[in-house]
Length: 263
Image (cartoon, rainbow, N blue to C red; front, side, top):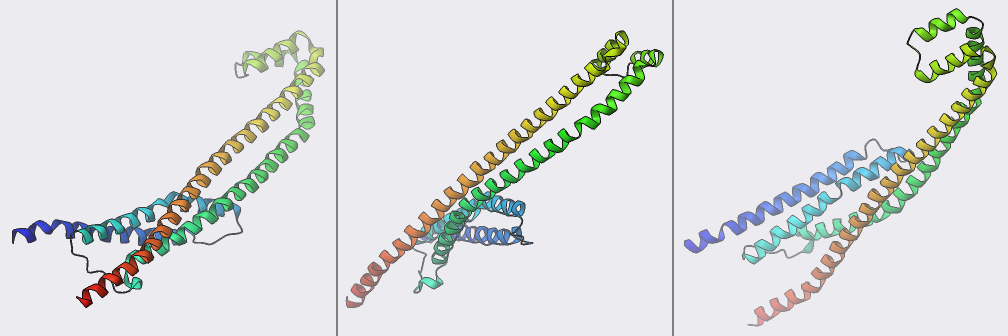
């Protein structure tokens, strides 16, 4: 009785590990399926989000496979594993097949994600350049409106003084209005300065947008692409060596059975 009670924790632990492993594997596969709905492969943004989601969840089945094999190993060591006559009835066999399938999937997703990020980078760059060009084309109209406002203020010294005294003008504009008050003929010079400032602001915003886009996409390319490749190597290694080991152990088991039958 004492011997049997000592052996109880091992079978219980093995069953718990196997059940948890199967639950993790099945739930992760369902999560992969839900992540793909609604399917929109033609949409580059959707494809990148889908690949990123798969990679973020990619380690969950790996943990499940590890727990499944750990629980089975504990059962074998404790002498409570009856084994299966056919590999098709062994969950470990299907776990190894799934490992190979996921390894191939993540290996395929790695260049697919890198190419998607490259294409998205080109699209974002074109959009940024287009927006900067449109803003540059609008500069003459903006400068002309400002020039008219400055001329109106220059022709009305009292109104100009009221604007300056209102305290609602930013310091840079207040300084410009003070110059206009001292020299009403500086409208043209100030208009050129404003135009140069606007062009500089557009240039700075363009450079910042390009830098932010490049940094964000490079981070996505490195993290998701590298993690996808690492997951592919891990799954393929487990699946390949696992199936290879099972193939090598099968003749040994049959030889042991033959010896027992002869004895």
